Length: 286
Length: 276
Image (cartoon, rainbow over all chains, first blue to last red; front, side):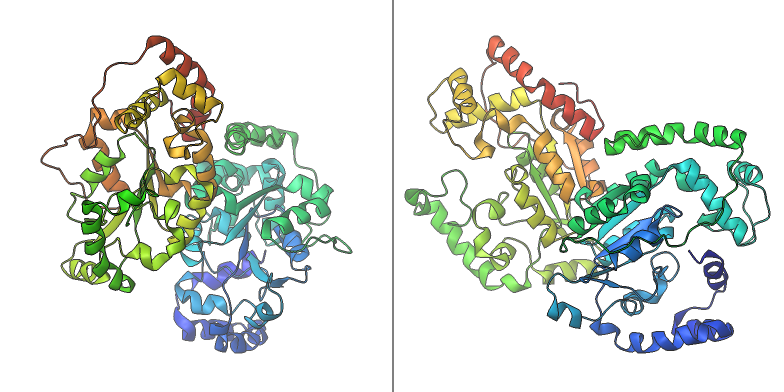
């Protein structure tokens, strides 16, 4: 998840296409991306809205899952895995959003053709669910859930790689106190993002149960083939096995987290996990 | 001709004078059907739980326009006639536009309590209007069963309650689910199917006893759910009311025993103990 870049991008207040063009041109590295996006924007009316969205959670394996899914011949990929449309770019409208997706031509040759995107930040944003439903009430939602303690640590390591200077224990305390950093995003709420029950309750209020697939990251990591097949059957495409399951966006070599911090997190997440098990009728064993 | 109801297939019923008049007044609606709305809300269940009263009260609101008839039974009986037929039951978009120009919301809906029992209908309703709001009233299933039985008796059914239940257990009657005395009171199964297809936030689940005790409060709750301001009606008279005596104590105990596990699952699903 290219969080650092995304943050800089959204803190400036320019709006509309011209503003966005100025943003892109402001950062010389983005010029080739903008140039590649322009023809897509021009053909936007020929493009379709996503049929499925992997909405989260951050650091739960969404990048790998998405890359495996688009390995299927009937699943078209978006222009970049994460579009950040429903949280940050929402004001640009659906015309803009369509530009990310394949044209209808694919659908002429393959009646089962679908496309989708995977923005993990959608899961922790307060308004994305409603916006997705308004854009496409038939969208299918895929959610990956990982042990929240592990997730929090992975989240912290990611922040540290992006230049976050507080220690893991300090970050947890900051979160508990509700302290906000400079350029704070939901990605900095490493504690709250793991309290899945609240988010899922809200999600089920907006989307029908049958349109949401909740997956366990642990199962996904140990047996990616089974999980990917579950997704294929949920999305209604032909069943097949991919040749290889390479790990995408890995965290690198890890230092173990302190025992004290782990216990603190486990204590924090216990009631949330209990609520989650009741909600889903399934025990993840965290 | 228009709806159908229980005797939908009876030719004599079709040709009765009242029905003929109804068909004649339906014809101009059918002609203007492309300019008509689809429902914004539906009271989809359950039969004998007070849906007629609730629909009657709801349509008294200045922002709610009633359908041509309370129960269109479109999805159960005449789905093949297509959406143009269905639109004919509802007000025109012109009325909606005029109302909105005056700054008043304008919504419409129907109340067919039989819909809730058919899982394929839930999907059809959601596909028709993904933002539809659904209201379901649930009454103590034992009372509902008795009320359902008495309804059948008024229509000429001559078996005793015990016999009727036994027939339903053995599935001898082969009635449609909405006229099934026994299984019509199992609310858990249909609601579970419904919530698979329709978002929880778009379904309002109400206890019918609350509605009978305090119709004003529940009607206002429905108005809020439909996104309308509260509105007080002049009176809340009970509609489609049956007059009958009490129920045999033994039958009641037997039915309570039967419904207990289903009720327990329902409470978990709804997240509220109805106390039946």
